[in-house]
Amino acid sequence: MINQITRLFPLWAVLFSLMAFGKPDLFIDLKPAIVPLLGVVMFGMGMTLTWQNFTAVLKRPAAIGLGVLLQYLVMPLAAWVIAELLGLPPYLMAGLVLVGACPGGTASNVVCYLARGDVALSITLTTASTLLAIVATPLLTWLYVGQKVPVPVVSMLWSIFKIVLLPVMFGVAVNTLFGRRLAAVKHIFPLVSVLAIVVIIAIIVALNEGNLATLGISLALAVMLHNLVGLLSGYWLPRILGMDDRICRTLAIEVGMQNSGLGVALAVKYFSAAAALPGALFSIWHNLTGSMLAGYWSRRDS
Image (cartoon, rainbow, N blue to C red; front, side):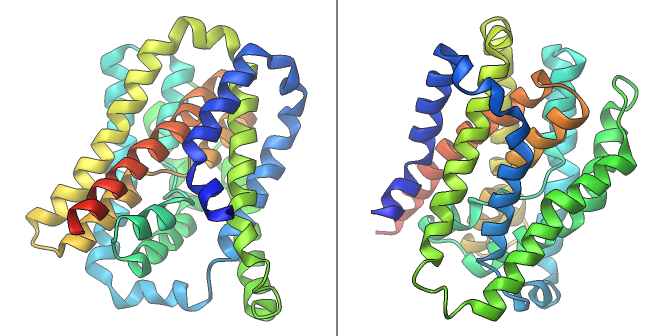
């Protein structure tokens, strides 16, 4: 039952977004909860990891290296190019680039499993990109949009350390020390993470009710194109390099599904609520496309 509810994340995200758009007063006052909610999500991610996941990076350097390069070279660059081509205002460009400079999404491991990809590689990639995000995310955001909007690199780095690394490491420690005792309730953490992300999306939609009405089409197009670039580059580049199809699927999902929740939290904290719109929309869209792609691959294998 819990797994079914979790897999319907895109539906819950759409429903809560519509509720927030129609009744923004229900969620506007929850703005201070965005960062703590993301901390809950990252703790849940840590509860799915062990210390061996961190050392596994060294065992598959080619696939991990390619995944990280696609994550931190292609995605932020693609976000900047798309924003320039569509003429997005600076705050939306900042939000889109911020999403592009974020690590792999927390839901990517589940989607990879459904797509019959390499789950071990997916977990290792998410772990590696999350660790690198502490430095890569603020620096890349500054590189691409620093001339248009002020980017407090050091403060952002410290925030990522507190919002991402500490909760993840705490989750790993709890899983290592009490994993067996918590086995009966560990399956609840994905559901808690889904609920937290859904509420974050609803808060951002509520805060940007007016902006959505005027910028909805161009913003939606930007998010769709950005996600498409990630999925296509993540699949076809390793395919051209002769990698196994399961690795190609995994890299497509890892690169195409960003940790947009982190992008939302950082955008609200350092730019504006409007700058968080790309991340909020990306949270819905990449889960839809990821789930559809996983379903296609699963059916094709069957």
